Length: 304
Image (tube, rainbow, N blue to C red; front, side, top):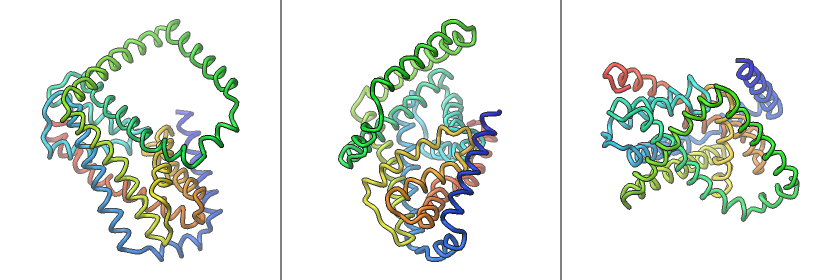
């Protein structure tokens, strides 16, 4: 609870600081210049990641999932992410949905874990070449001492291993993680059992990443700015950091992180914050009311 309160305080302070830097008057003027055509394009493009989420879940699920109900479950997950931090709400919604379709809880958690792992793998494989080409990876490496980082990582791993082995809570969590990991590997094997399922999982996660990046490109263009698709892909990958904030939906923190990254790409702070807010409205906040309706309908029908 204290961690969550502290995170909320940090997010609020960072958001207020960024807004003051951008200038309230400047922000109002920038929002007034938004191109409706590009705003509509951002809304339309973000239907693509929704399709990608549906495809990815259908690919890793050990049972056949209907298109309509699976789409409704992904919308319901947006509402779930609002009430739980780090996208846990959406993941829990998918686990519950698969369980209601006859999948054991461990298998459902493994399938959802496989989908999340595949999403990370696809995002990294898309962003890493651009990061290397931009020279930012080399620049970051010059600022970091590899031996020091290695020692710190080893110490943290040793401390975590000791905590897991020497405490009852640690041993209990270790057992749970092992069971979910085993189910995740099983889900991966199932997804890769045939070229069709493997291609579906790959296509789904590609649609999620590329569609989200295209929506960000449209949001930036709506305010008269433009950046390369590769740079915006790196921004989308970096914005995943907002998911670790113990704040439901990454509210506030996601906008600040996204605006800071766009500012680093050379956008003026008012334009960067306006584009970040528009992107978040399109990709998250606009889906919350629809997600609540889908969640309620699925619950009443016994699908969640």
